[in-house]
Length: 186
Figure (cartoon, one colour):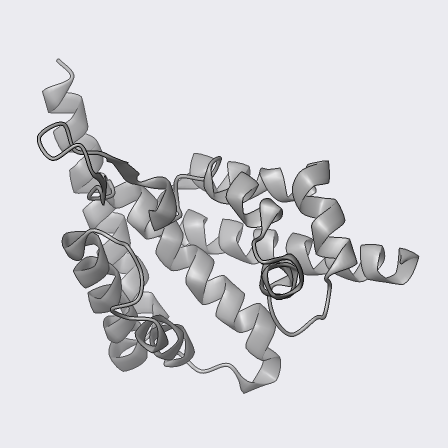
């Protein structure tokens, strides 16, 4: 168990540091600093230790074992870079529906997915991996269509144009979004 705790701590910390570096490149510094801090809280960390495997998220193993992942439910409710956070009741239909994510959180989600692919794929990583992972579950997730389309476009650009081009694009998008929010809040 101690061995799993050390390995899990190293994995989530390596992932967090990689996401931070990506967030800095995307122009979302504060989000990078705060990224995934909930993974160190007991609800998430202890499940990560118990179900640690090293090649995939412990949440998958927890789900397979007990039928759900308490760690994931805790995590998605506290981290706005997950599209699952962005579901709310529609006042007209009174049905829970996905809401379009703000650009800054789509940018962080992109950084998170790229970093996760790099951590889990290791030396086998290619810029196509995050897109392939995204496409495997396309149509099965509850995500706002505009958010899904934007993320897929960014991941496709990554696979074709590479990191430098996509991070430049993200910085411009985040800057424009920040300016628009400032105008709107005046």
